[in-house]
Image (cartoon, one colour):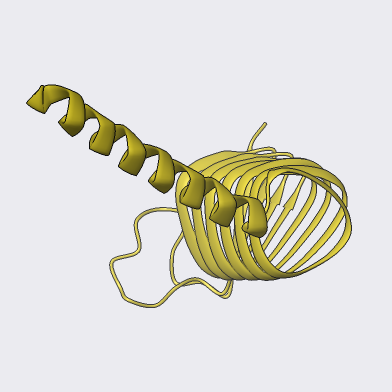
Length: 152
């Protein structure tokens, strides 16, 4: 059974027509398309798009998270953009963060200023720069060579 709670909010789970965001939104074994709030907590649930000051996901998942502070425990997300991110187990496809703390997690592409902990990445910040430079050089050479052979 899905359960959703909103604390200190002017809405009852329906569309909020005012500009004010709910203070605290909490999901327990539920799912949602888009969630915006100051503090969003998801326990054993899934959300497609989350925006908030603080986002906490425990044994859940999200497609995209944009927050000042993000905490994920045994959870996964495709894209996370956050000033401060903590991942304890689970993983993330693309993580963009100023400060990142990771414990036993996998991240596909990690773009961060500071990282602490045990993280397994496919592409980190340095790798992304090298990959971009390599692709640029390769395309430049390919286009130059194709022009030389077309003129003959």
